[in-house]
Length: 394
Image (cartoon, rainbow, N blue to C red):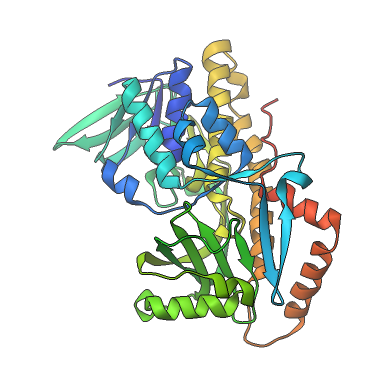
């Protein structure tokens, strides 16, 4: 087999890159070690930045998003039994976010790729990139018991934190930066109406809580739990009672509870690898960076990587601008570190780090009081939440 761009991973970033490249006439093949049904079963993020929404429109996969997605022009912070609304649109010259689940984004991209006749090989085993620093890189994989070779010009590693792409780079050629947080998020998905029309981020003496949603009839809620907590210890009843304790009284009184349809605990970490490229391999999304979910940046950062790599490859194939290839990592990392900062800051501001009420607790209270009483403070939160502008290649 032969293609121009080999994409490893059929999650939303790999599919979005493939869709954008195909619309520009750039041939690509996607390899995925799991089945399509498995990829669609992943329950993930649901808040899309303005930039990602615009990119999905450019990719021509916005019809269902516009019909079913929920545009949000505000978000709330809750603390000291009160709520403060951040007017995202008013503070950012009209920018908003879109609540539309990652599963739905993935489904839209899958359907668009199938309709366009794009090649996606699911259940591709033992995927292995080769000769990445040469002029003729290739990938081998196993399918139906046979070994297949895929020759290509470039490889996009969109296969996540545990994928083969980053592991294919020699350890002495990259540097990893990591922070692991001493708690996780216990999340529940339920077919109940959201408690609020907008997301609520709550800081409480018992720990952080988040009220989110997937649609007008499906809610997603989280509470902070110790890192060693077991999901089996949490009945639905216990979860709902704990969530109510951490919300302002008026919000808790309006909460509609019901059976959970998914319940899991996610650890929190910050992770970045530098550089994000090695020869003809470009790392995209979780393969290169992880953020705590507090700032809703994970999927959106992957989209900004896709935007950079897509525009770079268009320059290469349509204008012969191979001189821009080394700029991929530098360009992406400028935005990544700013998003890492925002996610780290939101996590530090809203979570409980100690059983004792000490200096850090008072600092959290003071910062929340200051930021929510200052237009400059509110604007800082808003412009980061809706997403900073994409970095230009040149």
